[in-house]
Structures are given as structure tokens and as C-alpha cells.
Amino acid sequence: SLLWEVPACWRCRYLARRLFLCVCRAFLSAMVQSVELPRGGDLDSAERVCSTTATVTYQAASVPTGLHAQYVYPPKVGVRRDHAGNDVEVFGVQEERVPVKLMDARLSQLNLDMHGVHLLPSNFLDIDYYDIDQVLSRYYPECCRLVSEVTGARRVLAFDHNIRSTSQHGRSMGGGFVAQRPLGLVHGDYTEASARNRVRQLTAAPGMNDTLRRTFGELPPLDEPSGKLLDARFMLVNVWRSIHPRPVERNPLAILNPQSVPLDDIIVHEIHYEDRIGENYNARFRPGHEWWYFPKMRREEALLLKCWDSAGELAREQTASGSPRVPATFAFHAAADVPVPGDAPPRESIEVRLAVFF
Image (cartoon, rainbow, N blue to C red; front, side, top):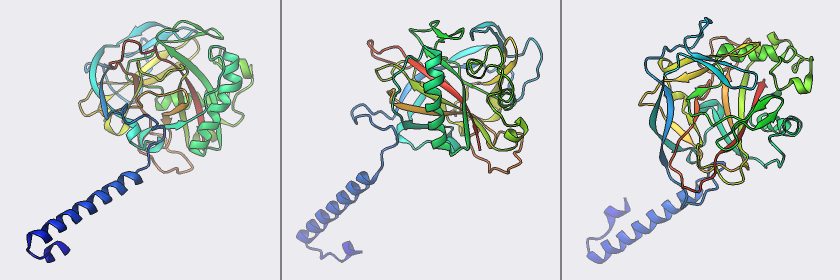
């Protein structure tokens, strides 16, 4: 190399050292300038941190695990829920609060196939989110557009939503529904069985507690045979967004890296409604779990969260279309309890569920 050919006099060695340092600085500067900031990475450098300590709620190690429900009543783990979405009976739940480290997801390029989550900028729609008719007529189509653009799906249907807030819980959302508190329990919204059942239900007339009953009445929201929809790849996705004017600080949404969760940590949780039985997943703690969050999410950002993917590695049912497998089948998530300033506003967010077909 050039350095080995430098004459052995002190002046030449000094000049060579200075030249070497200048080249290194120029190289590092070019590397830094070439790095593209992640989507949604609009925080000032002074605000950015790599991680924070939080507390989430897991199921205890003694709670039975498994990917598939056994359909007995009362369930080993589950709840009975009323028409308004309130839990009125709880079975087999043993919760424990666990401290975890949340990594700043803005520093990574996360996507639905690999990680089960995708953040993107999105104009805020200024409507009354507690007016169910405004949400159905104006916000549902916007969520469908976002998911369609990100996934390239041939058809997207928004079919349900909820608002979560520490200050507005219990407030009417219309249609007999009320806003809920942020859920600190680590959970996934669907299992394979409940995801496939939800698609089947969307090809029939809406049930008594279905949000889409206001729009479709006795008509099926999906006019295609359920067999055809289930034979191809489909996903259930949440669009999560803050609706508060200030950035989210209290109870931010934390996402568990799907590839850090072994099967032995997954628990089926049954939800008994008036007219159907749903299922979702809970989890028990393991030190190897990796958590992400997006600090100070603004209402001009939308977070796509995968609830189930029939092409995911955990899916037991194969699709006839032969869709290639993807690593992330779904993403566990929870409202995290993090240290916040005393004047931090309460979280106020909306989540819309969508069925996505390819």
C-alpha cells in the first residue's frame, strides 16, 4: 500500500498520517450522507433515542400454550364479551407485568412480510372519529387505499374499528360501541381459525354486533365465495393511527418481532360473543423477545400491523395459488407503559381492521 512506501523521515510520516485521516473523514462523511432516513423518521436528532425501558403484560408461565383452540366452555383461557365489546367474564387468565426494552423502529426499515409492521406518512383526515357514520363513509375508504397501495392487493375491505384512549374510554362511538382503554396485554388479534372464520362471515349477512351492518344491512359485504377467497393468499391487517393533536407519548403501541417468538410462547385466547366465538393469541414472556416501537407517532402517520397472513410460516392451511411463504404470519403487540413527562397527553388512537385479498 501507499503507506508502506512513505519515506522514513518524520515530516513525510506526519504528512502521510494527515492525508490518511483526511481520507477517512471524507469516506465517513459520504457514508453518513448516503444513508436514507426510514419512513416516518422525522424526529429531530436531539429527540432520537435507540431504546427505552417499558412494561408490558404477559400471560404467566403456568397458562397453557398452543396454536389451536379446543372449543370447550368455559375455555381454558378466554373471555365472554357483551355487545358493546366489554369483557364480562374472564377464564384462566394469569397476567404478569414484565419490564422490556423497546428498540426505536424508526432506525430500521420494517415491512409487513418480514416484520409484520409498516409505517408510512399519511394525511390526517379531519373528521369526528366518535361518529361511526363519518368513520364508515370517509375513513374506511382511506384505510383501504393505504393498504392497497402498500400490499398491491386486488381487493381490500375495512370491516371493523375501535378507539382506545385513557381519557375517553367508555365514550360512545355510535352503534352501541364504546371506546376502550389501551390494552397492555401482549396479544395478536386473530388465530388461523378465527381469521378464516372472519373471511367466511364477511361473505354472509353481517351479524348483530358487526359494524358493517349499518352499511350493508342483510347483504354480504363480500360478494365472492368464501372458498375462492380462502384458496388464495389473504391477510387481516390493522391500520393504527393517533387521533390526538400531539404526538403519542403515553402508552405507545409496542410490536414484538415475530421472528423472536417460538411456538412454545403462544397461547390461544377465546372470545365468546353473543353470536360467535372468536380467538386471538396471547403470549408468555421469554428473555429473547425483541420489541419495537415508533417514538412520538403523529396523527399524520399510519401504522399497518399484520394480524394474520395465510402465506405466513405459521399458517397450517396451504393456499391453492401456491403463494410463497413469508416469515411474519402476525405480530404480537401491546400498549407499553413507558416513562413520560408529567404533561404528556393521554393516548387517543383508532385502529381499523381490514381483510386483504390477492
